[in-house]
Image (cartoon, rainbow, N blue to C red; front, side):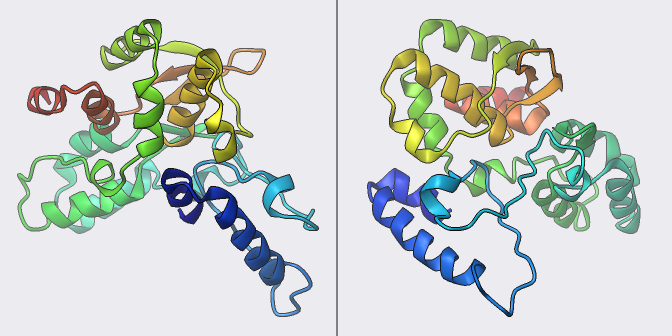
Length: 238
């Protein structure tokens, strides 16, 4: 998040320098530290941040090993809803907050499920709400979409309509890459950012590093519709 805000407000290089100093002292030759976990949407370029650190193991959303730790599973959500006596709302929760593909399984967004359960414990008939969408500005996505070609806008419309698009994903994408003003390159970055931030997920992985991307659930569909400037209409339809 510090790097995200720094990128948006124009002091990214200075923040990289600060983070490099901070993390190098915290992670390197620290006798009080056995191991550390760093998380984020976009991967931090090892060559730009972690000078002198070379013992990282990266687990992306495509990897199997830690997939179940990124969110809630079906069984965990069912157990939570049963605890609050609202297990009959499971299909609604699944439609709105499930569908993120981590490794080989579907994962629910934990922030959404927890906040929706908070509403359901007060009223079992509480409507589903876009909790995660309202907690983040996602200015990067908005910035890239402003430069989108008509073809890309058409593909966004197709996704909102329930179709899939097949795209190449760049897992090593960093904030510094986003400054590239080449339209074609930025469109490639757009799909990578949408995938990394959860707006899109893959249904399968064709050969050659390409992904078949879809909108994972109703909340993400609502989010993309907002960027399409039809936010109110899209929400009312749901």
